[in-house]
Image (cartoon, rainbow, N blue to C red; front, side, top):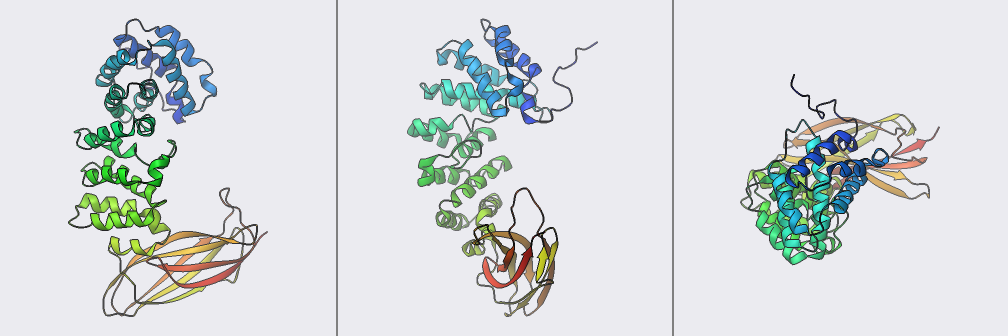
Length: 380
C-alpha cells in the first residue's frame, strides 16, 4: 500500500494551522536532505514548543529563530543549500497551501540572518520568493542597504519569473499590509515610481495587481503625484496599463477625487440636473432608507457617469465624518433621463457606532456634489 501523504488531510481552518507538526516534520526532512549535519530531531522539538498558542506571524518568527540557533552562523554556507531547497521544493500545487506557508520561516530566516551579507542574501531571497513571497523579508534591506537593494530590484523587473518581478513592486510598497511602513518612501515615492514604470505593461496579472496596489498606497499620501503619473501613463497605453491605472486609483475614486474620473473615461464636468429624494424624514437604527434619484442630461452629447453617494455620519461629539458608497456607473444618453432607486441601511454593525441626529446624504456625480438631503436617525 502506498504511503499516505501526512499533509493531504482536510484543509486547516486557520492560516496559522498550515504550520503544524506534520509540516514542521516535512521541513526538517527537507533541510536534513541538503544539510546532513542539521539536528532535525532537535529542530522538531524546539519548533513545536508552545506552537499551539502562537498566531501565524509569531509561528513564522519562532521557527526562523529556531533555525538561527541550530544552523551554522556563516550565512554564506546556509545560502547555498537554501537555494538548493528552493530549486527542489515539493508539491507546488495551489490547492495544497502547506508548501508555501512552510517556506515562509525559511524566507524569514534568510532575510534576518543575511542582513550583514546583503548581496548573498538578496540572491537567496530572489530564489525563495516563488515558494511564498519575500515581500516582508526584503524590507529591512530597502531600509538599511537601499542603493544596493534598489539596483537589484531594478534588475528584477526584467526577470523571467513573475514572482521575482512582483517582488520588485510588492517589496517597495510604502504601506504594505503586515509589512510596516517604509517611511522614506512614504515621504518621497520617486524610487517606487521608477520600479512601477518598468512593470506597468507586465503581462502577468499577479504583477499588475501589485503595481496597482502600490499606486493605491502612494495615492493616500501623494494623490496629485499619482494622478499625474497615471495621466502620463495613459499616453499610448496598453490594456495592462489601463487595468493597473483603474485599480490603482480606486481609493481616489472612492474618495470622490474629481480629477481621476476623466482619466478613466468618464465625463469631465458633467452637464446634468439632479433630483434627489428620501422616502422618510426619520429612520430608526436597524432600518433601511429608500433613496430616489433622477438624472437629467443637459447636453446634446452622451455622458459617462459614476454615481456615488456620501453619508455624513454623526459622531459622539456632534461633529460628522463622511463615508462614500457606490451606487452605479451609467451611460447617460444625450438629452435623456435616468431614474434610480437604492436602499441604504442604518444597520447595527460591530464596525460602526451610530449616534442619533441629522445625517446628510450627498449625491456625487464623477466626484462632485450635485444634490443632498437629510434624514434624522433615531436610536432605539
